[in-house]
Length: 347
Image 1 (cartoon, helix red, strand yellow):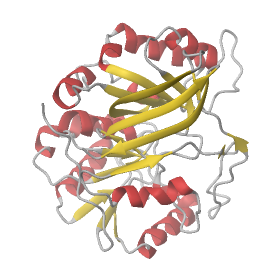
Image 2 (cartoon, one colour; image 1 turned 30 degrees about the horizontal axis):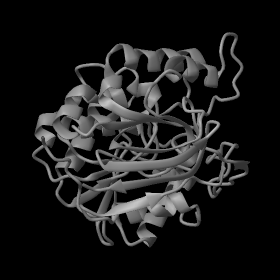
Image 3 (cartoon, one colour; image 1 turned 120 degrees about the vertical axis):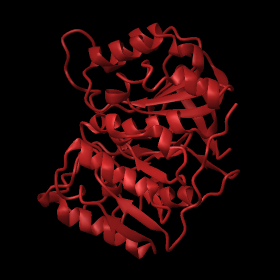
Image 4 (tube, helix red, strand yellow; image 1 turned 90 degrees about the vertical axis):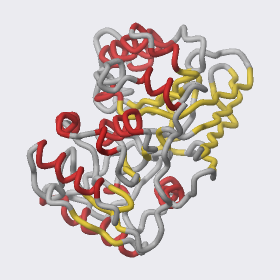
């Protein structure tokens, strides 16, 4: 079995490249972008802006720029500003076999960023960090999960960190064009739950973390292009803890996506699933709502299915390292998950 490769710890003075291999940052959002870049510099990092950051570039140009940053040994991390819609279109221009010979670098973010990060982990064995996007990292932000990102990036191989659920989550979406200096405002009580275990029990779920945004991964996970089964055989024979979050898929599309993973045999490779809190929980639908959809797809799984986790488009965002070994513990009672902890080891 091959070993996951963890990039070197990120230290003050290191160089961070910012490029938009998914969506660029248009002019109305530049004040916010300038603020978060200033925040990186205040933390002591050097910043290199890519040409794709503030202006739209073709898929080939975005892929070429990303490749140049990955090849550059002076770059320690790549932080896209946020996600987008079509990171998938750069994959055809990326030589993943060549990337294996490069010095590993941290790729950081979530949403459409996970389209590339999962490919990098699965095809090259590089650990990648699914967490708050750069545009959320305002220098005045006090959210624990945002502040934790840089602590996680500074860890050495072999070290570990522990996370517990947030007490509250953010319901309102922030418009950075009109509110460039807005910070998180967590108002809604948070409660993780277990979809398929209703009796009182303590659970412990272990395996290697892997996942990201269901909206894009649903069309890649079961294909030879991503090939999650081969990744498990090469890097994670102890099994996988699959985490997914939904950005825009309506409930029936969520159900179809999860059912497709099962029909393609991927459930034989995973020890459990953690689903992030969906942005479309309360969206009206003629046939089923979000919870009914995941019940249809995952309600009869024999492994734990944890839902409403702090992952994805409803802030805050935990730091989940693709390829790292994790231990998830919780006490389940009537489907409610209490005493939740997630310990992630860089091994």
